[in-house]
Length: 255
Image (cartoon, rainbow, N blue to C red; front, side, top):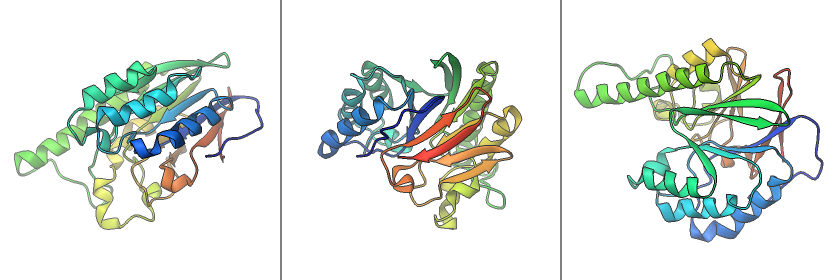
């Protein structure tokens, strides 16, 4: 597990996704969070904290984060929903001091700067040329409606943090096709949707983070907004560290 031994100026955020916590990884997870905590101002986790959505798996992450003195913020992922015990997972994480965003937002005061985070899971739906339609069988239209609810929640969350000098979007599913490059194109519709890009393009946050696409690419964009896929298999490290300045500039350095 890796950390960075040099503390630099500015707000530093560690990000990762797809940790898939399970008992066999407990010591590894605890060591990773202990190592990064003294090097950054906050930790953002872009979903899939658990292997199969069991509260016992969420407790491994909660135990790793409970001693930390910096904020940890996360969103749900598809794995976190698998056992249909998402509320128990949320309660377990919250007991460890982790803020779980689910169609909501929070403001972190870091280095005398308010950093707003709008977070939601996102959903499937596809990209240009392969969008799932709002047409046909009721079940298919429910999928479309679920994605609509996620898009509307992201727009609402970005409005809630609009006055913050630094604004971050935290998702699990991808809003940008560029970060899916490397994945089979026939599954892109299940890895995200560019419908999520509409509120990002309108509100222009400084940084967008997501996971889910284990075989995708690290960087992309929505307009001029940088988008990063921080899935652990993609970054090939425990965390990717982003530096944000008061002017809103963001740079990424993998440690």
